[in-house]
Every structure is written in C-alpha cells, then in structure tokens.
Amino acid sequence: MDILDFHNLDKEFPEGSIVTLGNFDGVHHGHLGLIEKLLNVQAKKKKPTVLVTYYPNPSIVLGKNKEHKSIYPESKKREILSSFGINYILTIPFTEEFSKISANDFIKDILIRKLNAKHIIIGYNHFFGRGREGDYSYLKKFSSEFGYEVDQIPPVYVNEEKVSSSLIRKLISSGEIIQANKFLSRPFSLHGHVIKGFQRGRQISFPTANIEIPINSICPAIGVYAGISSIRGKNFRSMINIGKKPTFGDETVNIEAYLLDFSWDIYGEFIEHSFLYRIRDEKKFNSIGELTEQLTLDKSTTLKLVTNEQMQQANQ
Image 1: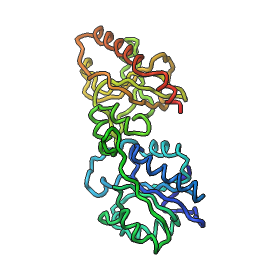
Image 2: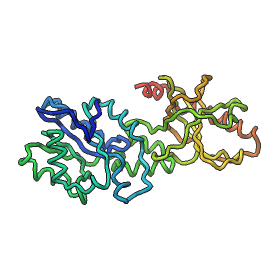
Image 3: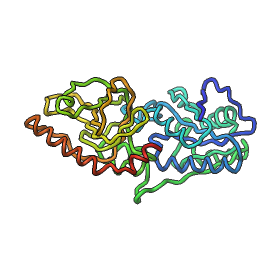
Image 4: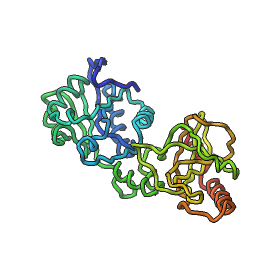
C-alpha cells in the first residue's frame, strides 16, 4: 500500500479510481464492510483503490471532543490497513481551514480532480464537508454530473450490538477487552519501545517489559490482563499490568508485561502487547511474598487462557 501526499499528490489516475471514505479508527468489523466492498468493486472494474481518511480526528478540530483518544495511533492504523491489499491511502490533514470546505468542493477538488473517482463507497454514518453537509445522499445527487457510482454500506451488528469506534473505546476504557475484541478486526494492542523501570520484578523472578502510556490513544482500565507480546518477530504469552503498583506506593500509571518463557535483554527495542483477557483488578498486597504468590497464580491463569491457536493467529 502506497501513501499519497495530500499537498503534493503526484499520482495520477487517468483511468479513474475506486474510493472509500472514513476515519477507520480501530479498523473494526464495520470498516471491514467498506474494505470488502472496495476490493469487490476493484475485482470487477480493474481500477486502483484509494482509502481516504483524516488526521487528527475531526472531533478534536471541531471542538466536539478535545480529549478524544484514538483506538490506535496513525502508524498502527496504517499497518492494519496495509494488510488488506488496498493500493493507496490518502490521509487528509484535518484542520480548521479544511473543515470549512463545502461538500461540493470536497467532491470536485478531492474526489474528482485529485483522485478521478469512478466509484465511491461510504459508510451509513460518514459525513464530509462544511457542517457535515455531505453524505451518501449528497454523493448520489451529483453522481451523474461527475460520472461516478456510489454505494452505501449499512451498519454491522455483532451479537445484536451495532459496531462503532465510540463503543469500542468505551469498552476498552472500562476493561471489557473480550467484548471490544469481538468488534475489532484483530485484538486490541499497545506498542512502544521498552523502557527501564524500577526493576522490582526482576528481583522477584518476574521481570517486566515496560512501555510508556500512549498520549493520544486509548488505554485499557487499570488491572491485570492475559495476552500476547510480540518482539523480534516472535510471540510470547504475557501477563500485562496497567496500574500504579500500590504495593510499592507508586502513584504513576505504568504499562508493564511479564513474558512467559522469555529471558532476552530488550531495553530500547520495539514491543507490542495484545490484550486478550482481563484477569483481575489491581490490588495492594501486604508483603512481597503475597505479591509473588498472586503473580504465580496469574501466570498459571495466563497459560490456561492464551491458547496455542491464538499464538498461531498472532503470527498471521
């Protein structure tokens, strides 16, 4: 998948393109409907596909949610999107100035002049242009004039619940990781470079790989999780703790993971923690011995919960 530069778009589409629009935060099952339709149309029309998205999230710029946190940072979103076989991604820098562009100018200047769109796929709840004027009906209204076809993708339901990024963010924030993962195209994860902590875990035979709390991305509720940590192209079962470590009187929230059957020195290396199950709440222990006993139980729980099949799927 190639990345197009919005301000210096040197790629031309003389035979046209097939375009889909959206925020694609989390790349959930609702988004997969858009992507599936995009690829199906490409198979018939033999034209390049372009996924158009925005950064930062429009709700931040428009003042609707200044504290908005994405499910994934842009780098992770692009990584996931690149796995589907889409030809190009165009990330539009969403500024206050851009928010004032009319829906008609959005069609003319971006979809037609820049991308020569011949087929446009849009979600049921996606809007574009000043005042959210543009939607499926608006695109349909001008389809003959500009010579494109347009399709609308309806909402997707999982277990009778409508899939949405806002719902997924709420679930992750409350620690309902199993439910959140049902809506996502792959298990929720956090990543970063391993940083040095207090090395207390090493002293009790539970050394951890610590990463920084994400600034603009969502973080699961405080607690202990079972998951899979990926580093150097290999996967390891892991116990992931998000919390303040009350046993030691710490006040800062940390992300630390104990990788099972692991002994590498990985300070400074890139690691990704995928969250699969919430094991328990964080708690304060009366002694280091009590803490060690609980961590041993958590390790046993992780071994039981994280299956070989999940480990294999993490490699895909």
